[in-house]
Image 1 (cartoon, one colour):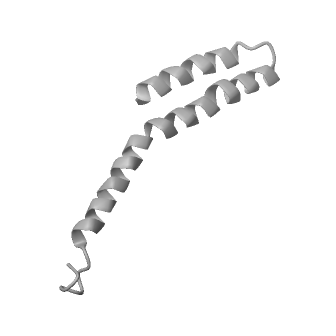
Image 2 (tube, rainbow, N blue to C red; image 1 turned 180 degrees about the vertical axis):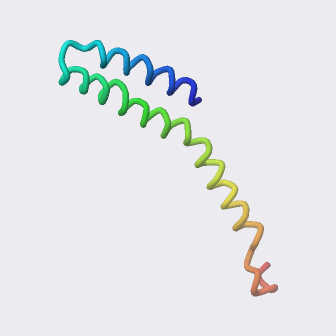
Length: 72
């Protein structure tokens, strides 16, 4: 996953460096580099978040009531 982000960052950085002005370079860096990378990392990290929340829900379900043996 991170190799894609590193490769994308390198390409966008080279595009920003060769831009004709500083403003264009910064715009390329922000709109083609930072924003898509943040979105990419958020989306690909979604499976980890989902697994973590499922594990937490399973843990809570396994614990049950704990204090009242009648309701278990």
